Length: 199
Image (cartoon, rainbow, N blue to C red; front, side, top):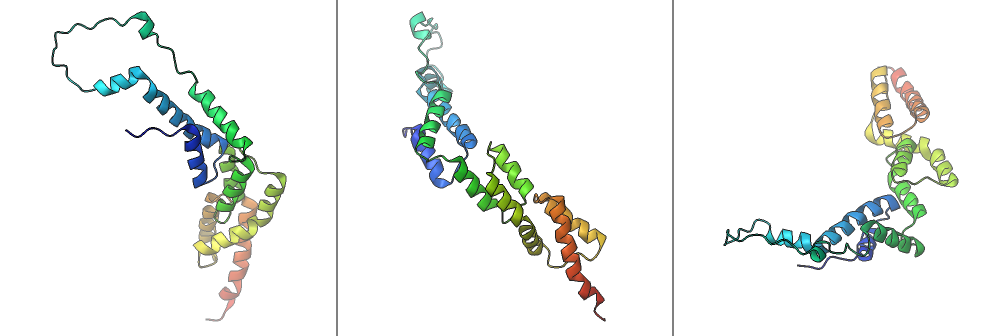
């Protein structure tokens, strides 16, 4: 059986794939650490090895385990403590950076989603934008919403039903009500000359 990777190796592999928030990296490493602890526990390992195996001699009487063996010492380091130590090591060496995670997540999400959605996603990771990043995101939201609407809908809204449909789409993408209103008003103005053209 292949030896399990150390927590540091696992963490560095995850961070090499993409930036991670401390919250999600902690969750992934804790699952890995608990699995490593379970595999290294001689009692659970022996139970796994004997699982499903039928004993040839069914008349064998189980022998009580001596007290000193039954109360084997627990692993020297608690998985949660070990994970926190690895996270501190990563942050100290700048492998793990909240700021870099926020920047990469905003960069990946902003072309397709509004500020409400982006802020909510960051909050789930326990991350808040800096004031400068938040202001930059707010300034670009109208332009981003216009681009998202244009990619989804080829035609400008010409009636209340179509306007409501496009508004629902933009709201689901996390754009604010104010921005959605501006986008649809401007799109409606663009459609007016077409409606006034003689048939």
